[in-house]
Image 1 (tube, rainbow, N blue to C red):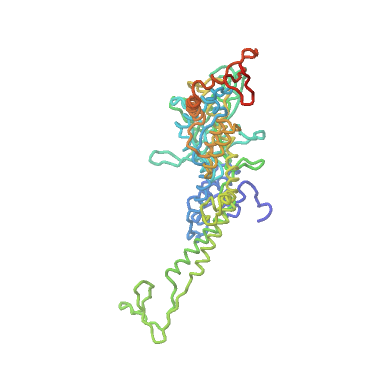
Image 2 (tube, rainbow, N blue to C red):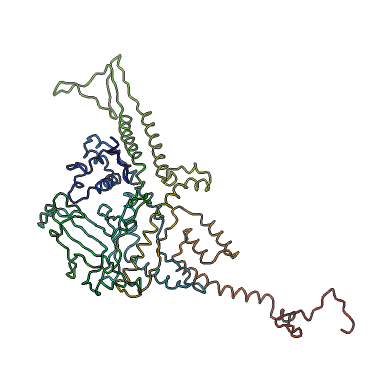
Length: 585
């Protein structure tokens, strides 16, 4: 490979794969679907990378290599190590649960709520109800597994007039084709979702490609809400006029109608067949009445400067997984000769087949008896030492994969309990995993904030009940701890800090929530604690008064009215032992 052929990009870690070199070549056996005329050439490497990664997840790398011309690859043993690594990283990323949190909502039930806390709590309640109806936890798991495995995932929102709420759908990142402009840094102004539809002979349908396009553009003069000259006022920006809206186009093209050069962003519109909504509206530049593209791209990692795509959890350990599969294949072959060894015989009397008159082959099986001559000898080939070495190599490779992926041996569960002398040592062992999950959650923080902002704005645009005009409130997806926490230590810390007055009740409850205590809603928990604490405090005051006696304070203290200072109390009716008692007093 010369320097002119050396490619360094977001998927260059796959350059060692021969199938990647022919990803864009016409007639490629490994990637026949990637050479269609409608796929942009600059997207071929990305789509090929997705297919390679998917083959690792499904134990089909050998089949993929065989399709590329390596016939011996069909003997490859793949035992699910790649899928296990993906699922383990996904489990730590998601934690035990995820919750929608709106900033300030936790102070709504305080004695003196902060400004905007009540509104934040109401928005949080509505977003959580939306999340339950749209199965957000399920959708997040769908999207995040694709992101962890492939490096990218896509979530799309749409307003449903019948359900009166935004709907959420997850797409394969191989269907996602953003059109980045020179000025688009974070959010493209035009996005395609495209995929092929196979031919259906029974229904009389030919092979075709479907393309769904979201595009920001100026409001047309024949819009539903007035002329474009003055613009449009969106509910989330009252008092500000905007001339930008999002258009939706959903169309299909027959593959046989497409010519060379007519790629995804250049499909001939005169040959398009536009889809129609149930109400009869043709989806050809339909004005969605919003000023944003309702598509959220989730990257597994923080992209490098100038890049937009994430990196798979398998990226940096892919060759180690290949080494592991090769070692497993060798171990399988070695175990065959260990369980059924190769035996050499000398001076044996071989049985003769009566039908053919030829000596029969001897088989190694239980109960077999071989007759040997006086000088006969039997030697067995012992391959168990080689098998033990291969098993040791498997353990070594697993350790390298755990270390280089930063999931760690403790995270994968391969660390022996006897190797961890203390909880502090376990925390140190999990340090790389903590950093990995922190980085992955940071890469998603802004994307989920954007998702919930879009949900609120779609509710406002749809004029749903309970949603008023005004700026959308910042909301985020809160993750549970990814590793077990010492609840007892956290509880002791919270009790001491709250009792000393250095922590508020809201912060104390939030710490318990993060530690994994079964608290459904922090604000409601604070309210219940305060409601329970008030009568208990009254009971304690009453008990203290009963222990003192009803007249004890009145006998000893009275207000000093002569001094002229109200509220000053002095002892009466008792004499200090230090003062002499004069006669007659």
